Image: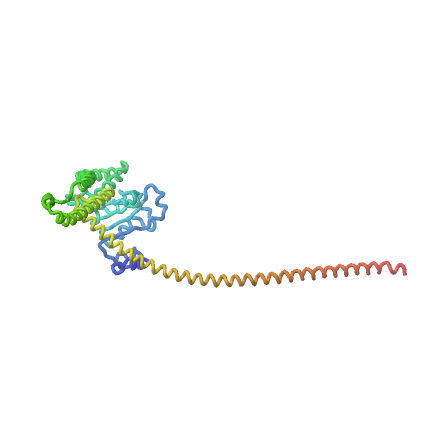
Length: 367
């Protein structure tokens, strides 16, 4: 099924599929990263307040990770949303661990743990090169995610004081960057309206060109010919700027905000490229869906023919059953008549028998 899906998406030539027991194959495999999501035990895991990693089905989380380390030191663990982040961090002693909270539409759905080189930071905190100015969209996303993780660590009880201390240390190190992120988002949020007002009130045409336009107003035909392309250019620039600011406002609401217009343009180009790729994938999927629909239609036609033949046979069987039923009713009437005649004959014989017996007893006395 995985190979079939990969062929549909056009990536089968970039994937090597191996079917087998992971515990047996792991010592023979080598890779840069191992991404794994072992069985959680079905939907029952949601019933526990804290998901115990030692009680996973088949093998514990520690056993799964130890086996994966035979393939690579870089591990990515996809786990339930209610697992203990402290227990996750303790699975790989001595290695950096980054815990990512996976949100969908504002709801926490799962947790992803990154170990070794896949982690965003080392155990002591974040290095000086983790963030740099100016902050871009990726760094803003990281800071927002780190704030959520620190908030989850803040919910831990006093029995996890060492981890709370580590979280406080990370928060102190990142406090300047978090403040810069908040300032950037606030500045962009307050700057959108002024940018729009400037677009509406001030033209993009330089003063020199405006003076030239005024000087040339003496000749009536020529200003009209030169002004129309310039007005169209200013109108297109204003519309483009308006569209750019509108899309930046949408990005700001989602928490993905670059720090400059150039950053927004780069991000929009990346999004357009992604949309083009998605459009290409949708076209491929539509063609596959069309083929499947045609095949499904052929199967439906064949099934329709079989159903019609079955219906004809059923109708013929029903008519045959009706004929046999009529015959049975006729034979039943005849059977009842024969039965009545038989009982009548038996009654006559019995009566004659009693008459003969009576005659034999009375006749000798008289004669």
